[in-house]
Amino acid sequence: MVRLKKGYCRLCWHQASQDAKGEVTVPAPARRWPPLAPWDVHTLWGYLNRIRPVLLEWSNPHNPVGRALIIGSLLFAVGGMYFLYHPGLLSGSDNWDGDELRSGVTAATAKLSSEAQFGPGTINYEEILQAGIAEKGHSSQDAVTVTLASEPPDSAVFNGGAEQADYTVTADGTDTAFCLKVYAMKRKQAMGYDFVTTSIGEGACPSA
Image 1 (cartoon, rainbow, N blue to C red):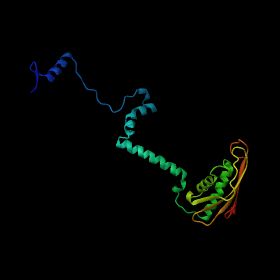
Image 2: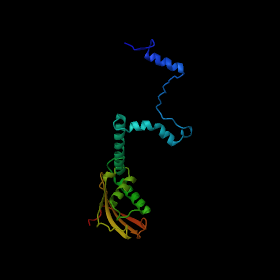
Image 3: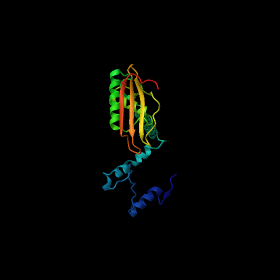
Image 4: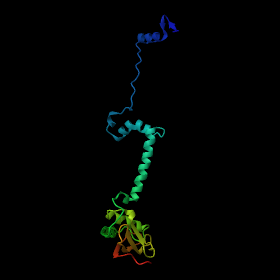
């Protein structure tokens, strides 16, 4: 049963009353993007303001797309950090040959000596040598082994002085080995080292 007012249904009566008064209600069109001022359309702030609703929607962990983006970002960050500290994983081979190892050792020690930023008293100097050799070679860093073959050197990082140590370098895939005798001199409170020299000998270093 439709309730009437003066012979008209109440909805029709209300619409007719508004038409008589010149009041017509037109719903505003829905807009997906917030309005932008003309002067910041080409600015970064204007662009971010334009995409903000979508970013907020995608960053919502309760949204399937947002959840996938959050998880994917975390996995990408973890993978990037792992490859940063294991660059050898991106190389084509896990095995080295003798000539490649010799070339890598020669180039890496020459670079470290010319830069004179690290000495044998630097923390994890074996890993610095390993990364430098792998960078100059074409095989896996994880297949290179650098072993301290002398007494641990005294660090001159804070008080200055001399640092000296011996390291044996070997690699998977070859019986070739090298003995690196590293000597460095550093002034107290100086940035870097005055000089770093490395002599390369065939075969493993004698045991300490």
